[in-house]
Figure 1: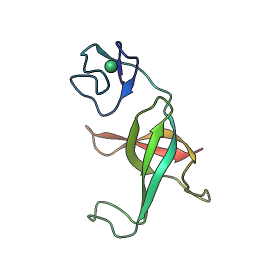
Figure 2: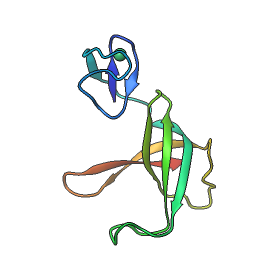
Figure 3: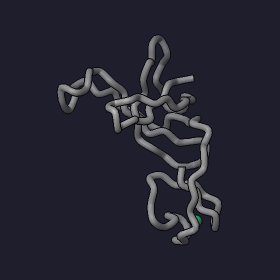
Figure 4: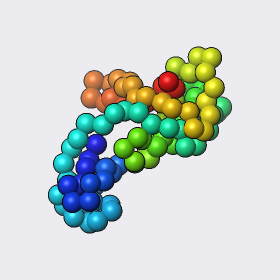
Amino acid sequence: MQYCLNCRQYQFYPRILCNNCAQSELEWKDVSGKGTIASFTIVARPVSKAYESPYVIALVDLDEGPRMMSSIVDIGDKTVKIGAKVSVAFEQWSEKITMPVFRII
Ligand SMILES: [Zn+2]
């Protein structure tokens, strides 16, 4: 994830300048992949045939600070709820595209 060396904040999505202090001293750092569900919705009617419904779209607050939108996958018998802890996984959508998704932990 992009990290500002000036104000020591992570940011997502990547930008040319820091979203917090507008400096350009940015670098890439590994992050924990852990977070908390801030909000979610269960999509019953998919936007295209490429998506199998129902599926869960969530806003995840990463432990490092930034919030990102993603899918909650492999839910099984767990309950999707605000405040649930999640961990990142990666789904390969094609040879060139890999998407971060989250599982409840
Ligand atoms: Zn900054």
